[in-house]
Length: 195
Image: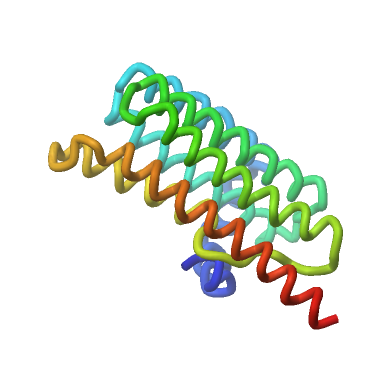
């Protein structure tokens, strides 16, 4: 997936980075725009305006790639930009998850399962990287994969072929996220044992 094919992903995103530079918008501004769009997506979910939700989710995914791609293309990557990006991503996940819960498309327990997995996968990586020299960007799924799962669930729901598709998408996000957290812990143990 994208986590395992990071180099290919970054090469493909270079053209987006050049586009971002042409826009003249800083990577941090693009990151904050993504948070604003996530708030809108959550509100649209709660209002059950699913066509617009799909547009907002796709825009969020594009902005999520665009901010990092622009930073790399313009050699503007900074430690604070990375921190802002990660914190903003967690807020975005919370806003969208809250909107899903308010929409009634997924039971609150499954929304909690999904968001707790997303947060724990991120926390595991952050804690490993803050306490060691290990780069823990490993595992089954990154944020882009989870966004694609949710977008696919919305499309299936909107096509009328899966009334529970959004809930199943949230459950799948939770499963792959919790597995990713465990994979990161096991990876850290393996790397530390090799020192």
